[in-house]
Length: 507
Image (cartoon, rainbow, N blue to C red):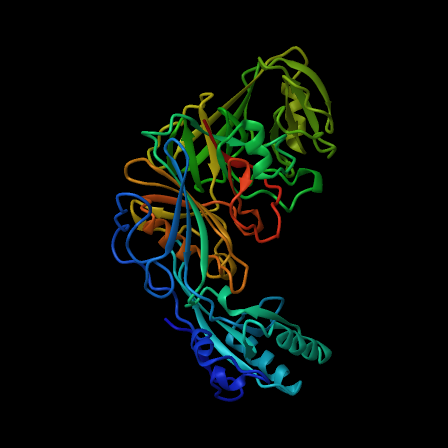
């Protein structure tokens, strides 16, 4: 459904509100976009060599330009480019800190713009429904339109509005998530497990707590290629911000617990599959008392037990809790107040509030404290064996399930306009019916060069590439693809960002 201008203080066409430098007719048309049309049916059939021969699934119909390069036996790298720039800039008025709101909020904001001496357009748009979250109608207030090379004119309007107490920002129309001509610039790695003789591995870098670039992790492991992994926690203490948000298993060791029901990429050797997972961690004292461990390698909330492994890489939080230091066999080496190192060959069970009392009562020195960890595949209901070959990376959002678009934004914690509808750089992982692994990075946030993808568009891209199951990994400035030591995409920060974990292809 196309977004449309609705009556606020006056009925206006979006073209009519353009101030001094109006956009071209083509830009004007594309500034009133419709949601990208969903793909019909199953994934496109791949060509005998290269990527699908069918039309690129986004933008105007046509085949994308492709370049193919062999990376290693069974691994190919593709550069895919499609579309042309026609979008320009507008000015969006902020409502309670957001660039959209209710109709009532939009009409109030439009009045403020007009009181500042400028015309305002109110635009209605629909955030599309996804598999687990219904559609919703919202409203934007926008002032003017400018061509791609006229951003400075839009910035003047923002400054003028600011002088009248109206908060606003410059917006590139290609970021909206509505109909666009692009362009798109993406990199795709295809890995054929019948030919690739190496293995898929996860890496958290130097430690769980520390962030590290994908290229650094790839270099240390001798990986021939790599992409960034899942989301990491930017809302914790600065020295802990490499912590994965969701499950992380590296070489069979659980380093971060799952968020129940969220998607994950499960790797073993050179096989890959996608499912939703759950984790269970239990502490059993020598006196038979059992207690659920709430988390792994993260800051504890009140009245929680958290397990810190030697991979944590920082002192445990000094939060007035209690800690039991365990050796590799689970013997209690020391009881101590919270806030200490996790030495090599040990782990630390950390309790806050009533869980600190539990540690003092059931983890006496020289006693044993057995820690058991379990990962469950929620689709099959079976346990995932945590062998040294097992690696699991948490996904940001499920995109494709059983060959159909299936975006699980709510279950994966991203049910909002910015994450579902807006375009961003994306790192995507998918598995075909034959077991081929597909890794894609869609560059974005580069007006006139590449627009990125919404989550729905990301699902369409993975279907086009032949994925039967697919997930969204971390994106934005984190999106990076490394091949033979070189970053082959164009990270939107301008340089490669440190991330929480990475997926490595090791020969």
